[in-house]
Length: 197
Image 1: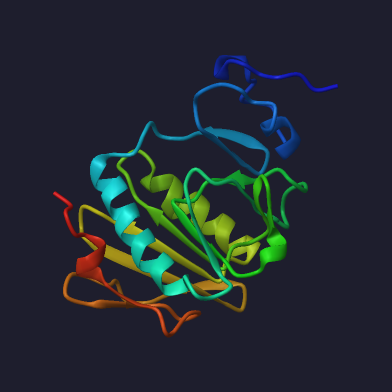
Image 2: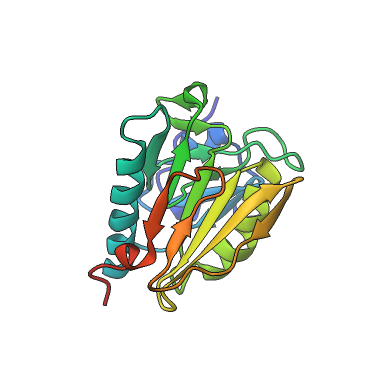
């Protein structure tokens, strides 16, 4: 029988964990499980990160408000099906995700692959989001992955084609982000960075 884990320091970071283990974590720190291994997340996001997240959420949520797709923001657990890992050993908390298949939703979050994931880079998580999550999202079949770079004020859009991500040109200030999987959704880059210092 599994027992609750009250302190992050009680975890053995060399051991692999599953989603059922994750449900027993009662400590304050936010973590993700990547192919069974614990990854401690950054502390609370910066004000610029939060502003960009709110701006994007407003635009994307407004687009889908009268459609069947649902929009979720972190913290929101997404259990990804990873072919190269044991079942239920990858749990991530993307900054924002869009899920169009309601059967993937349960009271714990998303059990399956979202259609669109957005990650907003912070200095402490950029390598994780650009490398690790890029590969995870590609392997699990996330149809579109956006990476928002606050410092450069650009958005990178990757679309899955033949199980590999194809990147568009970076979208910068004065341009309109165009989603390939949701072609009617267009978002001005300037609107993403409103009130960002």
